[in-house]
Image (cartoon, rainbow, N blue to C red):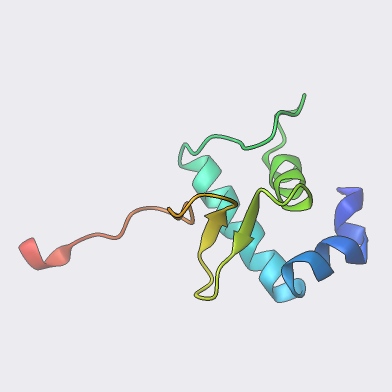
Length: 87
């Protein structure tokens, strides 16, 4: 298990365990869908990458629970929304 997840620092940084879980899940989905990592780590473990992104203040949840990159206005939370009106 990733040691940082045992500490309260990461929980407090994002505002609670529920928000931490949401942020991790959404960011992992984005990385699995092809988003690039925002930190350079010598590991292939995507969970470790996401935890380091949080600890280094690279990502956060906005008020509508979307994943945001610090300093960028565009969201990276997940797959694009589908426009079903044209079907």
